[in-house]
Length: 45
Image 1 (tube, rainbow, N blue to C red):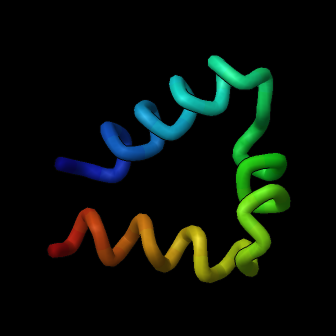
Image 2: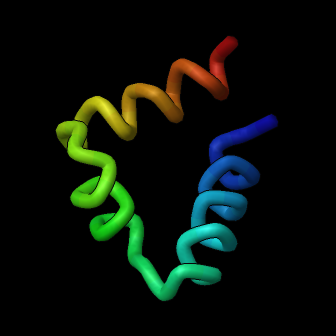
């Protein structure tokens, strides 16, 4: 699974809630860098 696919899925889920990626990160309570590092780790695994 590539970055585009992961971000497309994240965007789909955010859209269902009416959220942006920024809102997702804000609501998750984790630093933005940790969020993007997690996506990178998932894609590279």
